[in-house]
Length: 92
View (cartoon, rainbow, N blue to C red):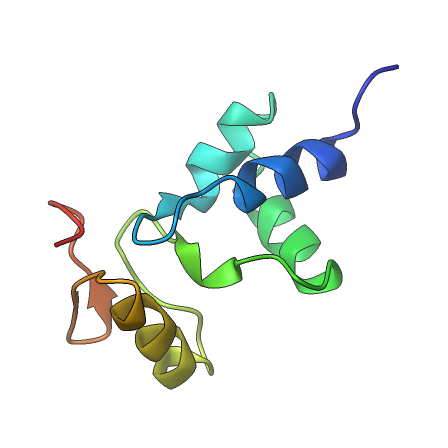
């Protein structure tokens, strides 16, 4: 049985360890669809229970409109957030 893109995204996002982040593009590429970063975001909006806060843009930007919650969730896992962005140089 072949897994769908949605199944792959869910599996990948669920496997991101606490305290680590991945970009939408990295998730799309790992799911076998490089360039489908926006589709990753769409899937994450429709599937409840995913650790959505562990997925960020390539520039480290947080989810627009959810910056406060996003920051709190990441900081609670030890991820450095400064000026509304995750430091892409490391997650300490």
